Length: 271
Length: 172
Image 1: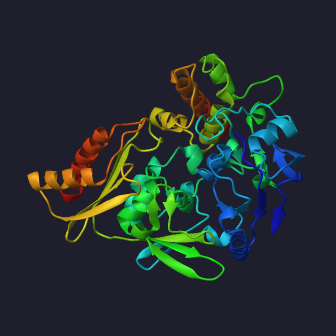
Image 2: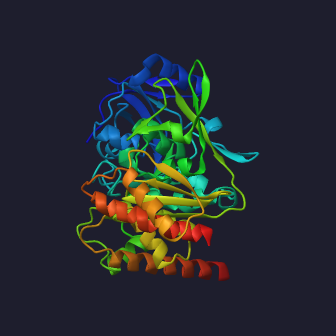
Image 3: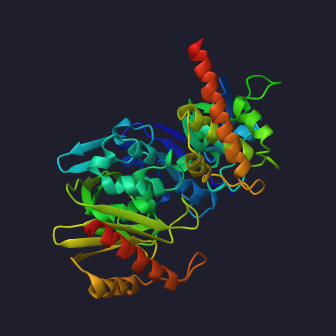
């Protein structure tokens, strides 16, 4: 349970980070809050040659409201966002989901973007990014690009980020005048979700996003559905997610949770 | 930009419970191991080493931190508080520690150092916590002896005592 040997680079500019990533490629990993990566290193599930610590870069530690979006830098810790005074008004879904991320003792160090880079299928922040239709800002020494949430998550713990790219930040849209709901089921509060769901009322009807079941957080937009039509849509969605049995829960239990929580949340946002 | 080589030891300086200390660490050295093996501060315990059990929880620059998920190299120049810093002197216990003792809030004591640090940090910022808040905080720690009930009791008792002692001081 000790990490393998690696070089440690304390970056002082974003240029340092990009240079390190360009030189080492797949052998370098960006270290932010360390709440996922350090556990992976301790278990030797990751064996990078170089760790690039980005937490002394003040420029990445900003939360900024820019027009209809909130831009969150790579160095923003989960506790920083939770303490941001405008959170409940600008990003109500994040305000609902963030207290479910880990524990107070890990939110104090873990970053929002780190959780997205780790891309655990059960994690709340990837689910929230997908539900809100946010964007991820990627930057390498050669170029900058923006990737939509739905294109960012490529599989279980896999993302569209290239080996030479830094997740510089994300942008989450500010959606006014709608209703959001979030709920998850885990063995204990703070554990990884067996099923996590986020719902929002949309102009056309309703959106439901589900984490913890498929390899990536997945969402559906529906018109305003009621009664058996809603049950049918939820049932089809629950099967499409391709739930599997694991040590925490059976596939059937996961489908049950998707149907039950999905219905509750949709009724909650549409009432 | 500082690049520390994997196969070398590098100097790390921290302020540990108010005292400047310096020792050497490889880039891969965990902060928990640095404190215990290099500094000799064995009050911080090491349990799961992947951030789940909470035994190694300490405070780095005013932030609750799993020392097993932190590298010694990351905290160079930081201020660190560990369980050794809780007692006001060698022969006296702090308010929270006394409450733990009165309520039998520990048995084997393995998880206690981390729980004390979480509670000390939380109570210094929240003078009148509810039982639900204490339970939420303790969800980040595993204790296999006590069943948690005496820990919650001790935390609430310490909070009440800290609140009343503060009131007396401000009245005086």
